[in-house]
Length: 194
Image (tube, rainbow, N blue to C red; front, side):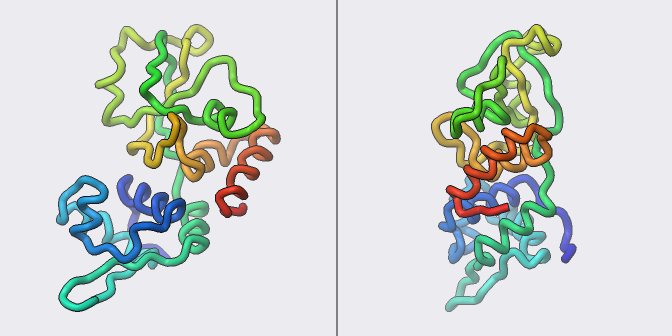
């Protein structure tokens, strides 16, 4: 199944449907409103989702609604094909508490795992320059915060922590066995088994 790559908004739509299952049955206009974009942009976002068999358009009366596959199908697809959203890691001389926690810092808040020495936060590549200047950045070992720069906006942030699916994407290749054990526990709570 190869229907083109899914763009960042498409990934966030997939994550939303996996975790909340509340957007299947909406039409393009309703989806565009829900994700604060245009109908034309939503059409372009949905094309690869449809082409990859993750959802389909179904005619109901005069409109077309989007019907997603079930949660387990979407989750299996996401695990196999969606990469870690982190495109770069930098260190900051200051902590911006408006940014959500990511990585082991987020996992520690959701589990019994001990926190890293410095907290890990996430910022999208698009918003990085709004939050940080070159003078805010430093090297590992001196920084007060680790920043993951993502290729998309984090979605479904709750209590300043990224969602469980994004947490999986960020930590799935972490070699620390304790991280993998705690991550698996969180995914089981969400009924997302590895």
